[in-house]
Amino acid sequence: MTPPWPPPWDHCDVATPDPCSGARIGSHTKCLAHLAPADRATYLADLVPGADINLCGTRITAALLGQLLAAVRLDGRPRLGEVDFSHTDFPDGADFINVDFTGSNANFYLASFAGLACFNGSLFTRGVNFHDTTFSEAVFLGMIVNGTASFVGARFCGDARLESVTCRHVLGPVAKVASSPEGRPGGVRCVLSAYRPEVLVPGVLGLSGGAARVRAGRRTAEDHFRNRP
Ligand SMILES: [Zn+2]
Image 1 (cartoon, rainbow, N blue to C red):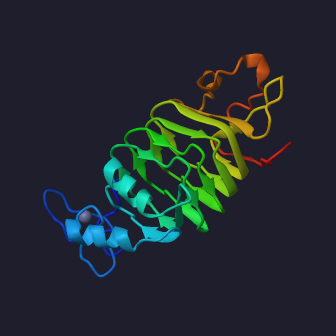
Image 2 (cartoon, rainbow, N blue to C red):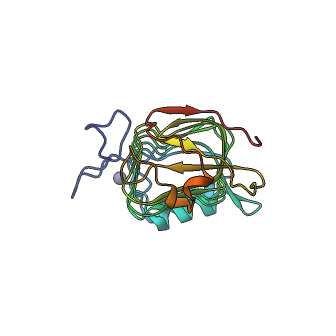
């Protein structure tokens, strides 16, 4: 989503064809997307697993996100520290599969995902903020949040799937549903409203009506999830 102008942070000096709101990188006057290739390569080379990242207001393509996550990989999993993706534009969606977010509260406030946003297997040591985030299609299979996951004001323009998600605390249009009659081993099955915020769509998860107790109509709900019931 377009941030207010001028944005209340030190931002990129690129002005054409459109003014860029991306946060400046270090002592540079450009955002990560607009850094000269050599400067961007240096920045990425200096990153270490668990690095703090501030990319608010930046346009992050799939290729650039891939480079960023590759730079912080540890034991096969990308590891990020404090991250600020507020107002960030992901024009190709985003692949955050198996990413460890170890900061206090991963911030996706008012971020916009134009393609598939995938958080499968991602782990948030603390919380994650999807407040007013705009998603196209989104999947959150096996995501673990050891804090609060906020979906307050989040908008979903396509299918959204939350399955086997474990959160200590959830805010927003998410409803907890019962495990299947056979009993699923661990995790919590959730269903997220898609297309129409008022209507929960069990079909997104392939749930039959009798198999799930869906507390519908909760747009501003607060559920407490535990790792194991
Ligand atoms: Zn820029």
